[in-house]
Figure 1: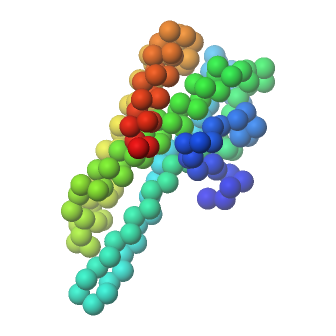
Figure 2 (figure 1 turned 135 degrees about the vertical axis):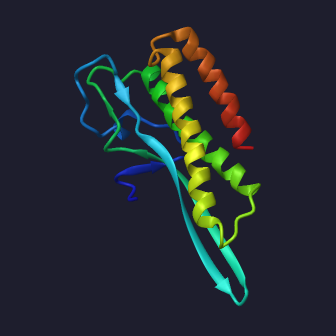
Length: 160
């Protein structure tokens, strides 16, 4: 996807409020929305009787689908939203680590990859829901601080 529409995850580059280009939903209590996720591209090449499988994994933030309400552009809320992007990256890392332990062949790639991707998307979605549910969308500052530490440790673990 073009850079005008997405930001690809980079552990040394944090989100900034100008990255949130979507139209905010002004009803409800939610101050901001981060639309992020991960995906993969897979290709196969044959060389004689041998096959080569290349899989690239990416984690993205959608600029046009992410938004913030006017007057809600605080550092605290941005930190909460950054963690949604971080959770997507953690799930992408789980996907990569599980890929490394799998025997993928030209015969099973079309069933194994989609199944593994769905499993890791389910992990990501549960973690996103737990994060927002437990922090009440960042409103519970003590629980938010706990998640800040938890996600910091998880990121350190997957970026080694």
